[in-house]
Image (cartoon, rainbow, N blue to C red):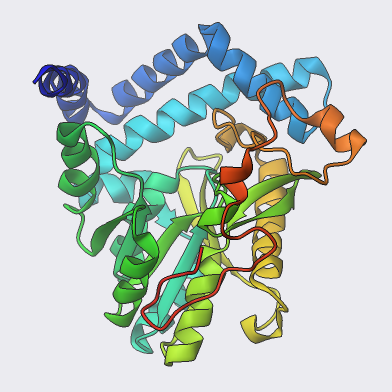
Length: 342
């Protein structure tokens, strides 16, 4: 009973911020985001985490540059978050804040004509949330986005199913049982949107790949889905995608194909590594727009070198046996019902 009351109180508190935000003009929303980013930067814990991540990824940067990127990253984080809530369900505002690059738009329109699906792979770069709004709006592809449910059911309904699915052509798939649901969505003609740079345990289908010279665990789900579609005759294609803010303060959606046909890759891990390299390249070009608040370098693999160990941030740790359970030394496979063995 107490938990239910607490959840409802949290919901009311969020609504006190959310509802006025929906009625703000763009300039006031932007100013509010800048203020919120400034306040986050003042929090010692947040500042420590962000600086540690930037230093771990790019140790060659001088402290002054690390501090500049950190401060700017808070601004971009809060700006993207408030702008996303400001745009939901409002096509006029979506046009005001973002668009898809012409070449990418033509490619996606062709996929719609051919009735082919796309597996969009996004990093936490730019505005990954608005990517989910602009994709069905501009490209006309139906998008099933994979999201982690919130523990608070009121907020989960507000921020996930209640809001995201109010956008035409958007459907939410929650992370628990996401593989089965994603494959079913692909069968039904939906494209998939998934985030690549999250710490996926090896027992859940993750593998360690190189990211800024450090091994990090990431999900092979995009490659697993592509393999399954190839086996079942479902036409789809993996695209690396992100929405970056340009000099005009608008978010621009872009997408890139894999460097070679999927069938030429020797493993799911090889596909994932290429996607992570694409992510790293664009992050280096736009470091202020990456989510440095996430503990991306949390897990240290058993075979980490002394040089790598010296670069991991203060929060990093060697995972226990449960991290590796069931899939240690075993690649993820797909069964006929669409589930991975991981």
